[in-house]
Length: 309
Length: 306
Image 1 (cartoon, chains in turn green, blue):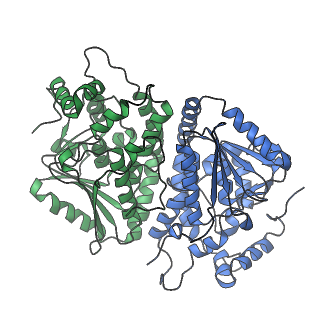
Image 2 (tube, rainbow over the protein chains, first blue to last red):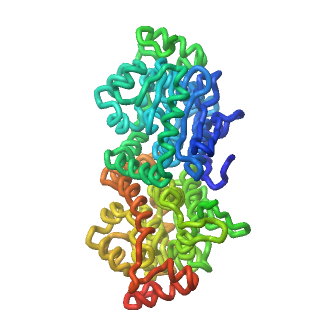
Image 3 (cartoon, rainbow over the protein chains, first blue to last red):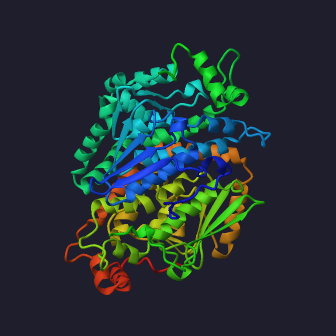
């Protein structure tokens, strides 16, 4: 399915941005219903994604956007949850490259952000997709996955869904697209979520305006299918030109500017220094591996766990 | 089924962009490589431009990128036959004209939306210089004005004659207003007249005008001076400019302008007006260009000033 029409990324850390051994996305198109479904398919890793996986996701979204049979795209996760976000093993490798003696340059750090969040990154490709986008969320929805759920036109969650962007507990980086979050759930709630890192429950997320509706887990598929069918009986031109107008209006609200600024700010934040007594995710990853680091983090933040049943 | 023009790969066609890097001096050169057609580009070649700019953006050996045209001109802009085909039915392909949904995907992907060549140029993290001789029109006028610098030969001519063909382009309005002022932007757009190098210098479009035979040398000197700066400095600095331009509305106008660009494609020409699509469909691209030249004979684009 790879499309040689699309620009490739020949940046230095290709090992992060190149394709994984196994595809991250299952991609299906139901031509009768005009619906494409993208399933994050790494259940053994709670659908955590490497940058390469997110590049693959981007390509599938462009496939759906270009497909004249498709009017709506559904995003969902295989297994126990939607997704826990960025693969921590990537964070570990990105900041502790054994072959390199010097710290990464700022331009190199920004290039990583830009690949993911710039105009050709998964984030803006989903956010400005001309087809209707629906996030079907169950279980954990954290970090980059939380951003996808926020970006989609419609988010339907099961009762067990949990949302947050816990980056302050890792390396301190703020969401690149703060403006959209402000418009979606409000400034106070964004600040509380970021500053505490506390997960938001499905019902709370509905109240916040992050989620359109909450249904029991066993009704989730049917509810999403119902919403998709409702959308897809509307004219193709209306949906696509409507989405282009949403994009323009959101840019007037500052979304595009926010992302441009956010990428530079996140780059800056990657220079974080930890003080004694703080939980140092990077050090934990280096010395204890991904699982050990998660255990240590959960101990440190035991009163507001991210990993709970 | 309809196929997007930007996906129409022409087998055996030479690459539109030549890419070379001087690793020592940290300068890349991207050359529009279609001199027999005045370096005009069609939709698929627009995608090649996107990839070439990204290649330079990702290249760790590059601080500065020079864009130039092979032959006598920088570029005359979009391939007019492509514009005619954009709106023309092809046998066995479509029974009806292209839908709005089709057009917006097409335009956003290859030219003016976030993923188009225009925004890719604005967003290139390296310092960009357009080295312009001869014609610099239309889409390539947008590419050049989207560069950080323009060095022009004394024979350079600039304009965006969009209104003379299929109506206004809106994507770069904020950028152009910031760069050359509202008065001049409106004059260029509403008349479609060409600016010579001196006038382009006076209105702030161009950094420097040099004799044609010194163009290469002067552009290289500028590139080498910029490349003395630290790579991180240049990169972070370019982000600052991109953020500033975005706050001033460049990003927003690019999105809105892409939408109104599709609207422009829907324009209706009155019986006494020039109709690119109708003439082109009937008599071919050459006839359309001739008819266009005839209508604007009082303000020609194809005459080089001394």
